[in-house]
Image (cartoon, rainbow, N blue to C red):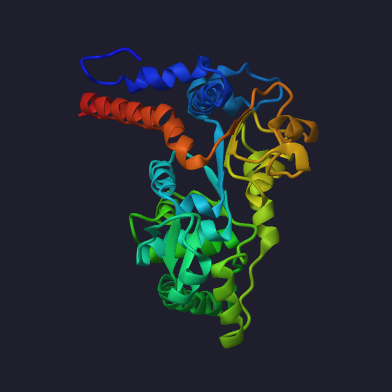
Length: 343
């Protein structure tokens, strides 16, 4: 690492990852893969015989971008990566989100009360007696969930009334959009998803505190229904009708499979980056490498997917710093220059 006026050149440092070997090389490859997602336009591909006339013009084709699916597990929102995810959603840098129930509720809870940094080694028994819950080395007081209950219950009441009086069919994604509207807080990921019309899918929406609230609500005011089939049709259609798709998936489980399976409906995603610590020796979907997804038709045969074996809070900010962030600021600069010329 050469001296540069007494300062470290972080651009050069991150650029060196590509040829460093091991997981640093995979980080470098992932940066390349995400940048391909961001910069692809339909005009990069030759016109196909079956394409309609209105999709053949250069003006149209230069506007068609790769649809980026972003998936993450609940611990990502529990951690400080929530702010990184919010940046992506606030600036419309991703097109479709899949997360778990915790990935929904923890965002809203953080708008109501703070999460604290603790330690992995604090005894569970001691925390339980103090009314504190541990997420790794993060601490969430029970009172945070009481505040969440007080906030969300009236919204569930209103949703039930609208279902009964107006015939609204609630899907998990519509529910999340409504909650994003109601929280009305710029720190919230789903506030920005609501404002920017970015769909958020949560096939396991009952598997967390939000599900607990729905359980309690079903005794007080029974009848609220969540239409899962409506959402599976919606997310599969997101993939099927896209000209090009990219997947960025942090973690595993239902979040990872839900995005991959949607892309199976179009014979595979064109670009893919996995970031998790899972290994494939146990046959789990979480640990499966991208090559296994190719065998299922979830990633295209000619794709060059990347898996990074690493803990996300260490790596994902670096990926964003080398991909989404410069892309966003370059686009903003171009738009500002365009506005100046037109003004």
